[in-house]
Amino acid sequence: MRRTAIALLAVTAAAPAFGQAYPTKPISLIVPFAAGGPTDLLARILGERMGRELGQQIIIENVTGAAGTIAMTKLARATPDGYTIGIGHLGTNVVNGVIYTKLGFDLIGDLEPIARLPANPMLIVSSNQVPAKTLKELVEYLKANQVSGGTAGMGSGSHIGSLAFNAATGATYQLVPYRGTGPAMQDLIANQIQVMVDQSSNSLPQAQGGKIRAYAVTSAKRSSAMPDIPTAAEAGYPIEVSIWNGLWAPKGTPKAIVDKLNAAASAAMQDPAIRKRMEELGQDLPTVEEMKPAAFAAFQKAEFAKWKPIIEKAGVKIE
Ligand code: ASP
Image (tube, rainbow, N blue to C red; front, side):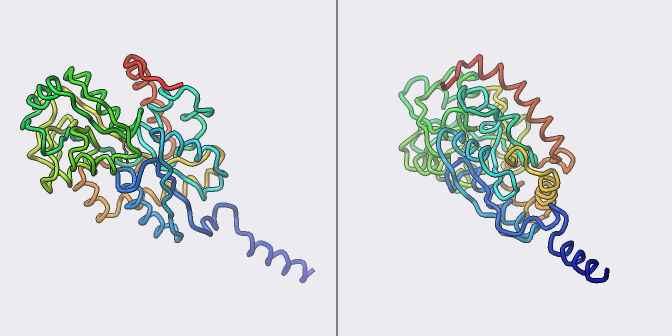
C-alpha cells in the first residue's frame, strides 16, 4: 500500500498538470518582416519582456516574403504546443485573407488569437531630396513626377497606407516591394526610393533625426509623440489608418497555454518602461480587456468585415 502511494506521488510530481509546467524550453516567435522594421522592433521589445515573465527565452525568427503570408503559413502549420507563436498585424492577419486567394488555410479561422498588441498610426514621409515641404506640395510633386515608393509587399501595412494615400489624394507612385520597411527605410534615406507611408515606430526616429521628411500623421488627432507633425486631415487630406498588431498561435494550441501567453503579453504591456517606449514611438496601447484572446478574436473578425469590401473595391488580388 505504502509503496503504491509513494510511486503515485512520484508520478504526480514528475508530470504536473498540462500547461502548468509550460514553458520548459525557449519559444520561437515568428516575425513576418525583415529585421530592423516596425514589426521586428515590437517583437523584440515585447519578446524580451514576455520571456522574463515566462522564465524562458523568446527567440525571434524573421520569416519574410509575400507581405507576411509565408510566415503565417509556417505558423499555421507549426505544432500547436505553444513553442511556436507569431506576431502579425492588420495587413498580415486580416487584409491578406482577402488579397491572397490561394493561401491554403483560413487566415482568420486557422490561427488562435493570443493577444491584441499596440496600434501604430503611419507617417507620410519622403527622402530629403524631394523638394516638397507640405503634404499638398508632396501631392503636387507626385502628380508631376515619376516617383518610386517603398512597401513591404501587397497587403502589408505600408501598402494599405499607400492605398489610403492614393485614394485620398489622387496621387500615385510606383510601388517597390521590400521584405520589410526596415530595409525600405534605408533606401528612402539614400533616395533610392522617394516616398513611403510607414508606421511611426519606424519612420518617426528617422524624421526626428533629420534623415527623412515627415508631412503628416494618419491619425484623427495629433500624436503626443510628435506634436509638431500635423494630421493628414489638417494638412488637407482625410487619411486615417492605424496598423494594429497582435500575437497568434497555431490552431489547436491548448487554452491554458494561450492564456499563459496572454498573461505574459499583458504583464509586458503594463510595464512602465515598455509603456514609455511604446508611447515615444507613437503607439496606442490596448487595454488589458482588449488584449484578452476572446476580445481580440472578435476584434479581428470585425476588422475583416470592415476591410474586406474596401480591399475588394480597390481591386487588389493575388491568385
Ligand atoms: N510592418 C512591416 C515591417 O515590419 C512593414 C509593413 O507592414 O508595411 O516591415
